[in-house]
Length: 282
Image 1 (cartoon, rainbow, N blue to C red):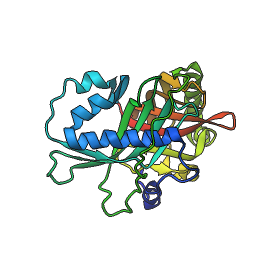
Image 2: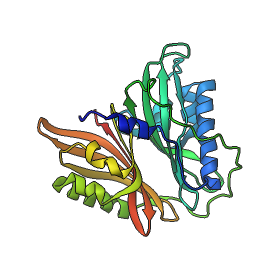
Image 3: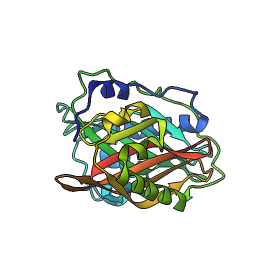
Image 4: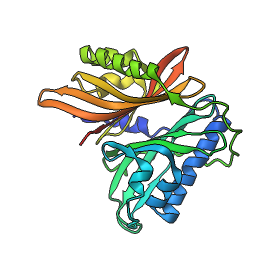
């Protein structure tokens, strides 16, 4: 695995910039903080049981139903704290994602034990609040000597009217992932350059996130990869979606298999990769 230069660490500390958040995005910020607040108050298990969608997935490392998994866990007094630095939602307000840093402690008064970044995909259906449809994260080194990431301001925005549409399975994004993998197997740099959004964020275990397409050449591992998509969901408005599956990297030491999650955003009529998370499959 390539070492991460300091320039990427500094980039990862920059909070979301650009246009003001939409009402749907503001409500997602509020949902993320409510999720985190419940974890601090009632514990990790209670928070995840309360926030997850009935079909929500968590990676341990394979993807499993979040409610089924956390329903079997005991509350052990561990502490998990996090906050969002970026959120985005579909124009319909039925699908969105959030990301930011987290800190895990084995107990509330214990020294910091583990650090990382999370990516959560949220789904909202008619008559319901935001629920976590997918939750994944990567561990990182201790960031205490680096610039602190800037949290998004807490939002008190009311939940917008229920979306008129709902997310659905997408064969288009599944095909997009498959084609992405075919191209990445031939030339990984060109495959990513052709598909990423300008403000793309890439997450790898043990490394701080990359932010921005300009640093791809220095961040990507040089070995070819292929994607085997397992699921894809797209917003009812057709402008935001996610896909997941397994990734195989042709490392000289032998094939390396990971789980991946892609968040896709339609820009100028074309799908662009907004977020990619890769975590080992075992």
